Amino acid sequence: MRSLVRPRSGRVVAGVCAGLARRFGLSPFLVRLLFVLSLVLPGTQVVVYAVLWVLMPSEDDPRARRR
Image (cartoon, rainbow, N blue to C red; front, side, top):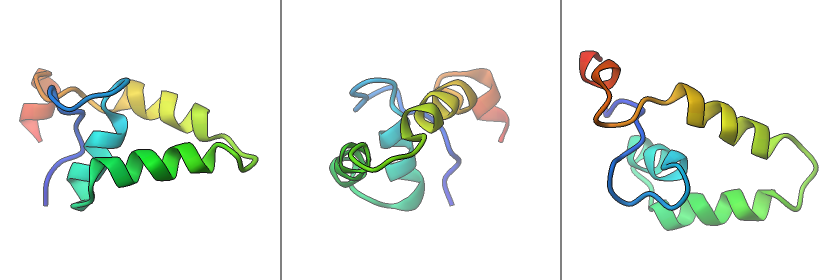
């Protein structure tokens, strides 16, 4: 199973949706669409996205290569 990293290519904002899609074998478009649709629901979607942006290493980050 692939590790959870933000890819260098295919990013739209920070690569969080693309990284999640790659990790779980989904289409990046589908993950982005689900995220945008979830914004109409009350919740902390934007905060979760920001936290993942900070915590998910970039593909070219040395921390990502160790895993």
